[in-house]
Image (cartoon, rainbow, N blue to C red; front, side, top):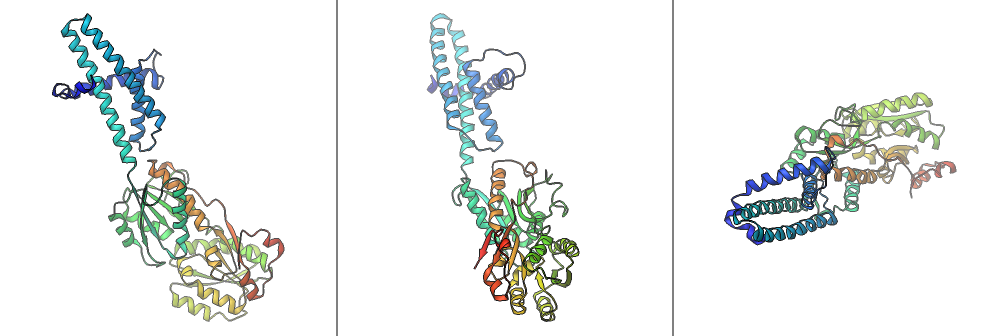
Length: 428
């Protein structure tokens, strides 16, 4: 019987079949699927069609999940109903007039053709879900590289391996402080399914050119106050992601330095005035300095040359410590700060472990790789079709305390035992 469905007579009645199917689906949905109206005993056909309708609906929402058991159950119901229909048709041929039988056959054929079309839609959606999704990444690179590493690892853990279910298109600006808008435009030209941005400057660039493409940001400072999103609960736009606490923790980093060297009275704070994160961070640092009785020696810079001049003009003994005010300019030239701190035998406090590995004494703040892994979970939600505005903004799960014992020995600082017991990472 099924093979007879596809002759020219039946195919010409596709619209009639779809109309009939819509009627049956509407009835089964109204009375049994969502519980509206009086309860009645549904036929196997209605239940099967309703099951397929729910599967198709989930497909259209791009939540690409098709449990084998659900699909098999739906197909099994349809097969059983098809056998019942053949039996009814045979009985019809014997007991009813030929004209009436042809009418029933046409109706039954229409139903089965509708089922076939529904299955085609499901299979089509399933095929689309196996397509490789394109993830554009806009990053400063350099010391931010662990973010991308964590993102890749996190996606693999969630079943999205690079080259199979996803592919990455990466624009790395090599820690340049220049406007990364051109890099963002190159990414947009590749037509990615979504963008992942690292750092405030790169999120700003992507937002300018991305249009409606979903953006999952990470390492973004104060997204609400900066105007990127409406609130942490809902962005109200196409952005979501993981912010950072780097500015908020600036005061805490000064406290950490005081715990290691209680005698700190004066600290050098160099501010990259063109970077908003530096301005925000200094506000929190100043509040903490006032609380702990530390005099901040603030110096504003806009370039490497100005940074070098500030360090040269700061004589040995004029400050007791250097507290790094987070900025890409400072990260780019961390070696200058490390060299000054070691030469003057004073502690240098920073905000990320990557800089401790380069010679800074201590860091308290973000773990870039863990933030990348955390971001991967949000990326998967977006890939499954959830709107960014429906995904709350997250903050780093916890800050990390790291210490460089080699640097401590070099500058003659003895780390208190109770402090070492709280350290998460030790660099030697």
